[in-house]
Image (tube, rainbow, N blue to C red; front, side):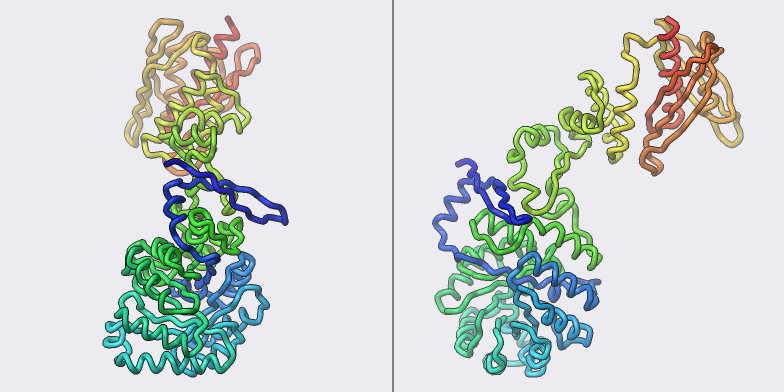
Length: 532
């Protein structure tokens, strides 16, 4: 078995964009044996279950803004909220229902006439009716028997249908409900007029294989579309949703970024891309808007998206390993199962301890630098050395390192080489420095004091190299490249000889003193080269 190339089509600015998705042929063989629904509706509950994320509370204006984004994304249904719970929620649902969206607008309601009436007052297209059916909920929450629950469910489906509205019915905690009773409830509400039934895995406690069996069983009993609402308590929300689709479910409840109660719900972006890539089922969702939608919800809810979040996370298309970068630069499909542009993302080649010369070369050449192979090796070595010390390398760090190394004299043209630098300083002692250098093949040592450790080190260099006694330090400039106590120090010095010639040189180190010494030695080497 190998890989199969599947082309998926998206519409961006009215133009057709072909994007390859690379999937396993083994997966394809298995899917061929599965009877799949032709279309799967995307029911987004970010504004209802997503807002139930601990710490999240959206204003009516924010909910309307997200609803417009979801409509632009082209989800099939938007669950706008639970209007009976508060005046603000009522106003939010009503404003969304009146916004003339293309998507179906749905409101949540308990099996209560008041809930149904309030939802209808909002002007929604659909009511999502629910009541718990598991024995644990009946005993500890509702304090009701099965017959009473069944009667309430049927009565309120009939009541809502008499109002002339679409009804989706959920048996809350369905996956922990006795299967025979669950079938009885769903058959009864379907007979009462429910347009869709939803199967909630309310606390995320079913496995994909069991979910497949459950939906397959219900498909034999129910003649209306079946939906699933999966929670992620065991990290199986997306897997269970896909298993339900394999068994014939025609709708999946999702939230942007997987928001929701406790560990959240099935992630919209993951479900949509899995349906497209693995099953060839293409919801109407405009996938190039997935990252944009994710970022909007992240900003308005204040819930950060983990960098390693599938599809929309910052690192979803980031590559650091040298082996991976080499493959990506040759053919993106080596380490990317789908194109980042297909979901509105972008590829990042990250320079770190696992980076190879290819990725570093790409970075520095994009900065306009043209290092030799030897310089590139030195840049790579320097970067890896910093990363081994736990430092996170930024573009500014790479630029400083690369400019410094590219701007250095070749080894064969250097007259002076640094061997050792020792500095002592403190509150009660005069700053003192000792340097050990090799000048034209002969070792020299110089020691001196100064007003500070940098001054002492520069004076020590002058003491060791008498030939530069007339070389004046005209300018000294220090930059902390990226800020922070571990920032790279970039020191620039301008030296002037007795004839007025100027020598500009840099030193880049984590230590300010070493960066200053390096800059000074680089300038002295340029001075000796000119004189020779």
